[in-house]
View 1 (spheres, rainbow, N blue to C red):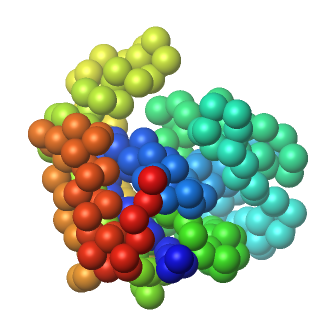
View 2: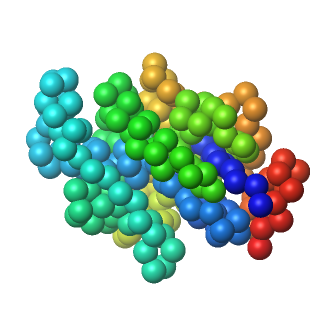
Length: 227
Ligand code: DC
């Protein structure tokens, strides 16, 4: 059985988390939601009142931060920060923007690069994020760039927010456009497709159709059959 690292990059709301999790199940791989790690940094920094402009303070904060992703009984991921379960806390619109903002910081990216590469050392992992195929795992075996029309993405995100988090569709759309622009426009490791990534536009595809396309690519590359 080949051992592989598979990356899925793309903008917010394209379906990366659902697809990564299901793809990992089909292959019997682990999956890593790297956005959750950025959210974890943002949440802990906010709670500890870390001044993000102060490099020394940010460095000391990161040195004492331990982030772990564990799979829970339902198959979704649980995020632990210094042992504390903050899975629910990081899934708010405010934390989405805060994560996108801390993600511009070189110290934060260097810290998480390390965490992510350690998680990938044993292979057999599906990583989802913004720079997985370009920066973190440029040698990944199979790379996907998953996108969808921004309105489709905003509708999905609006529907999945508990009680819509008090936002209407217009708010969600505006936040998403702002976040995409910030993620794609930053200097360091911006949201981008790797030159060798397979592009999938999921605007009009079901989850199963996207998975079938991905499995075909993976089989072509590796001979893996999956479940
Ligand atoms: O995937 P997500 O929406 O949970 O990610 C939250 C933010 O984290 C996203 O807006 C940008 C940042 N991020 C990043 O810069 N690089 C990654 N590999 C993953 C996320």
